[in-house]
Length: 262
Image (cartoon, rainbow, N blue to C red; front, side, top):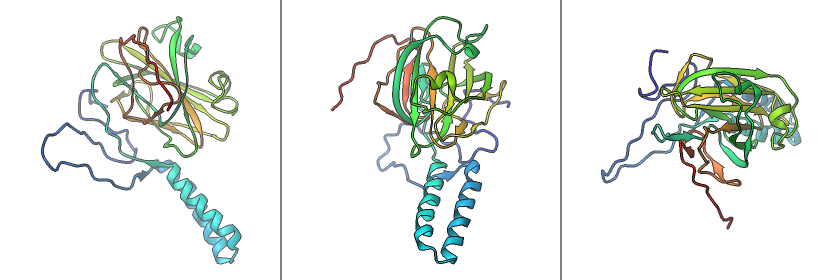
């Protein structure tokens, strides 16, 4: 890839959807238009299989099976939806890589795969865990602009992704993105109880923009984000995030946030 992170938002080769850059406007009547989300190519075969099974049941007049299968087909199509996201721009912003619920915010040692030389180091870092249920969008996006310097896949178990031990036991894939000024942000895709495949769209050496699609996880999962030293999250446990849009931290911001459930 020849473009730099400061160019117009690039798309991963083969990824669905189109780039979108939004700017603040004071023009009267300016508005965004809603459109149906695209379907990620990874989901097309599952939709086709489900639709064929539904059609067979319908042709055989097995209505008690056809109607539930029709519902499953619609759900599979919704699971693989890939909506366009408008990403806030700024070198100080760290963007959520996943849709979902903030379930944990902890001070932890980084994973060994990200604690190597030239990675995150061996000190404790802030980990923000985002749990994606089966109704969330499962396309994952880059939290910052920069170069993918590490990608490390580990085969593992499939325990509930909401459990803390999932970070060490489950199938997972680590990424490290390094910005032009040397800032590094690591994050990990973790397969869940029913997830059975982690898919990556980028590899070491690729240049990505903040909010760019970098991969997906099938059917329920979690993403852990490891923040740079001295940076506290701007999100709270129990808050929902939107991949490519929600600002989860600002670089160098050490202010602790307190929230009230209401």
